[in-house]
Length: 404
Ligand SMILES: CC(=O)SCCNC(=O)CCNC(=O)[C@H](O)C(C)(C)COP(=O)(O)OP(=O)(O)OC[C@H]1O[C@@H](n2cnc3c(N)ncnc32)[C@H](O)[C@@H]1OP(=O)(O)O
Ligand SMILES: O=C([O-])CC(=O)C(=O)O
Image 1 (cartoon, rainbow, N blue to C red):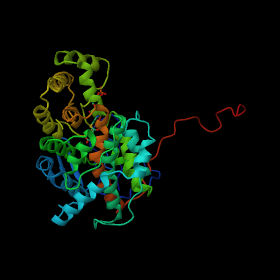
Image 2: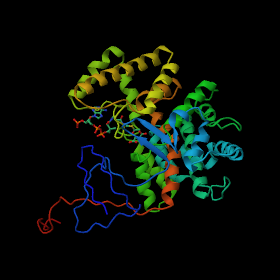
Image 3: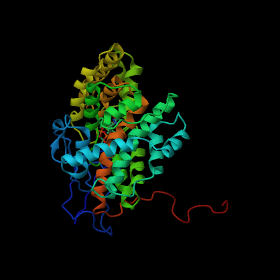
Image 4: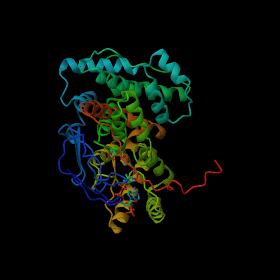
């Protein structure tokens, strides 16, 4: 039996005595558990990834992310989904499956053609995913849910590239059999061959974004899955949640912030002004990490390697100056706020020629593998997620009904 109270806006870790998940004891006359933001509250178990916020560590299925960034992207995706590496037969089937489904059918192209070119790519994805006709037969030998989840993942990459092409008044391109997943994506997006270095960098950046335990988007998906909604509703709910600036949308906001600041010498004044006015600095801070995000540690040197042209370099130097000013200012205020995954990722994407308003959609393109992994895990043993609210409105009988 547990009873745990977490005061909102504080950070105590409130661990409960182990009770068999997913069932909590029924709420009766005992003191209710209250948490407005669920900070520190454990609401389930997962074997998919582990975020160690104090130490600044992240692993997927028991592998530290530093050891995963050089592994082929789709092999890591398989690991995240199924908890083991694919064998050689599975590697080859997965590669051709993803390539086949990255290509949009005529019906899918037609649907996308009706979407406004100006619609934000995240809204386009959230709307398009439930409209996909999912496969009804298994070919990968991992069950229909996994088949459909991987199908959605491949389509997301095709939809992003096609949406961008249509916005540029250019034709939609097809993937090429035998090419790597992100090689095809970059070619379908830009219409030109990426360098092996660009593909390698995109692989690494996307591996870093693939999975992150019970983040808001994944949790929203779990809530949706708990009603027994289908996988396309679950992924769509997660994408909608990822879009916000306090979550995935911070990637676009962080680089646009650097663009608006303009040059490194203006960074300190910008940070001081934000903090004086209680404005959040995008790409800084994290609910779980009490130190620098382990992914930011990898993305910063990647950005330094990639940002060579004067425009990219100025943006990167501006970000570095913002980070330094934040470190000074937050330390002076006794706060532990560090760069998160979003802070330097934008500089990497920018150097790959991705416009800022596509950043979060590309985050979704990677995180969808995590969403599907959680769907598969959660569906094995789930119960409806339904918290309570404390009613603070008018009491019955206290209102004038004559004007009804
Ligand atoms: C993929 C991802 O989702 S990573 C996160 C992406 N989001 C962002 O980058 C948006 C900017 N960051 C933020 O808004 C926050 O840091 C969040 C939402 C990520 C985490 O929020 P919280 O868990 O509430 O942060 P936390 O409890 O550490 O905040 C402590 C204090 O630092 C402040 N703070 C936290 N982050 C920032 C920031 N980026 N800029 C300015 N102040 C900040 C908070 O306002 C709070 O101040 P207070 O004590 O005066 O109220
Ligand atoms: O876990 C979180 O709160 C945010 C997130 O998705 C990430 O950092 O990748």
